[in-house]
Length: 281
Image (cartoon, rainbow, N blue to C red):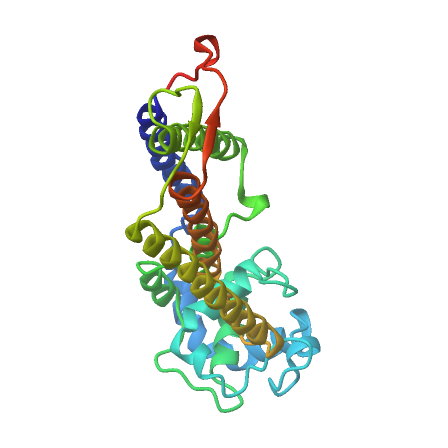
């Protein structure tokens, strides 16, 4: 029964990943040739007008891109290396920055994006066009990466919530069953059971405790790095995948240490074996 539960949970997990990744996939970009033709001609004037007027970008980023509330845009090498990211942020927004996908036209979005990418010391060649964005979607889109690495509540719908809950129940059931068989055996015999730890068990215990300390240090260091990035207003997302991995490894190594203690270091006592109260495993 424990293995049946774990295999069922794995099948449900594959289905969950399929549903979640399907919903977070970026919309295909349609290359409008009229927009492409107007970009080079219009971006110096239209882009500046949107930046200073309709988009009110100067309120956060400054008239010279020096950064005020929002991050600095002038001379930002990270933006120049990934110009598609500028388009993504303009369309979808990020943090305190609003999404302009529904308030600006497609031509205005490309105009202001190219204005930012070609002003105050910034320079890209060729210009950002729908073709560039379409090509960039063959890679991992930043918004998709964020959603795959972190479950954001507003992005979860009822099927995902149901499957995630059911997976946790099945995994918990299966792991408890496997642990019970490993730690206590298939049958419980009345009486006091003395255990004597072996050198191998002591080494395993020390190893799991040392790994717990190592992962705790890595987790704290990653959190400090991410918070420092936020404080510096860098246009990068925190490494949530690393944070989650280190936190999960801390819990797993602690659980392994407790399991080793139960198996090899803790004396046990069974008063009576009641057949009517057995678990399915």
